[in-house]
Image 1 (cartoon, rainbow, N blue to C red):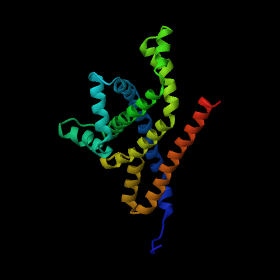
Image 2: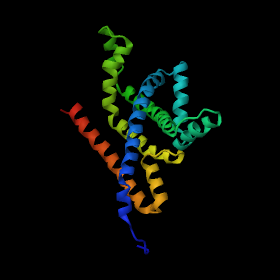
Image 3: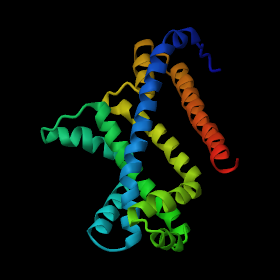
Image 4: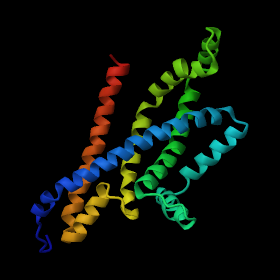
Length: 220
């Protein structure tokens, strides 16, 4: 094709570095999803309330995270805080930015799920002697997660793909490892084809695993 000669052997020799980068990407994906979930749940409840300081703070978070690029959020944490003398590693910066972004999107996903759960469910929980917190934990949230399960998985995949932005702040996650390898070998096409294939394989693995988990949890 256009006289281009492929040298796949260079890519295979660097495969351990790419897989190490993929492991970093998966670490950030899981951690940012956990952090985002823990922040998004109370924000969704506050947003559903429709008033108060919790509503205002969570609304500002959702608006900012959902209406600015993730790249901007990474840069603001890494370079913006750095300009103020607060130096954060590229790993923590990417983790914080994706957690921030996940929380905004998940808050709206959770809010939609909460609205789909009949309000009588909480009334029933309170009539059984549960506190509001216990009602959410034992009655409302389990029903909500069934409703939003696949939207949640989609956000997890979106967060995983966004870890590639770490390349721009020097993080050697999957895309960063590929960028470094191709800068040394000058085999850009080969490295990024293989890297794209690894991203695709990871995304499909998450998707298929989620389908299996859903069947085991909700359709057994």
